[in-house]
Image (tube, rainbow, N blue to C red; front, side, top):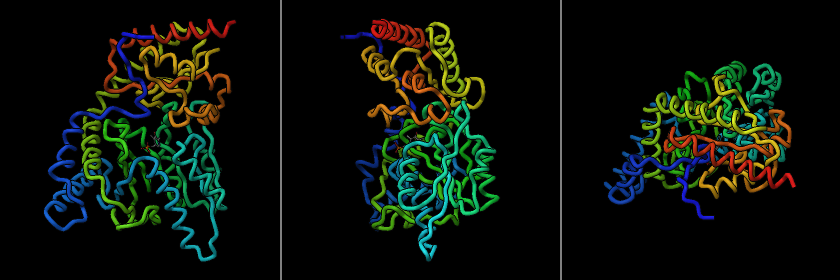
Length: 395
Ligand SMILES: *Cc1c(COP(=O)(O)O)cnc(C)c1O
């Protein structure tokens, strides 16, 4: 079916296009300044300086020291490094090889849930703290999961499926009082929320570039000075012995530039995006029968400004996604990373949403290239597709 309608990308929580200004900053590091950071010659020194500058810039946004930043290949590696790094360091310290207890939330990204599952197989005890119907961790529930032998906690800053913002500051404070290392996966928060690690009180924080108009495949882990983590990739001792491998210089430069750009426009952009999100959400819920919002209400202050997650009664989210794609609109059903299998979203499940409603859910996430003028057309195409699919299932 040929379609001449304007393509509209509504999947910014999966990844973003790269800002041309970011590409511009990166280009010299593919051609002129292509040296290896570890090399002593001028080529190497220039590359090294670029990494030093980028690290300092990123540290500035996090209000930490540059030496507390470890560059990685992205959010997944940073989360893996946090959870495996801390637990392995404890194992190494512990003569008897005794394992301990960790707590993660039920709505974490698979980059945290998978390493947690592996730790369980290795003999660690893992508690999964639940969330309320809005997808937010309850502070008292959280407190009750902590034990004498809890050594590590990971709770994401904002959820990638329903955009729910977690009370990170409160949770981190509880952990600090008990000497528990606290990690937060901030991949979805970088463009919108407070990133000051002193203000937040976190010990470890994962960020990446591919969600903020920077290059994919580059990220960082903030590691508070004094927090002991065992490196998970060893080799040439790069990144202060925390992560071996030749530095992705262009990627790191692009990451720093992307962060700079996204932070400079964050208030204005958050307002623009939430304005469009609220408007489209309202139109959908009003015009499309049997549609219901998943996650925090849009005016609760507990939802990322760019996230909409809606279920459409009697329609399969996956079919909706495919049909919308044919109509030139990109969305996601649940988490993009799990779209290949048809397991119902673990996030909606944890929120107590029924399987039926979960299977019929769609995530629309807004970003830079979406404009107010697109909204009527999005609604139009979406209602058409929902109507068509309901027509089919009615027989
Ligand atoms: C995207 C994302 C990740 C994974 O990041 P990659 O850079 O793709 O490895 C982890 N956690 C959250 C919350 C994310 O949104």
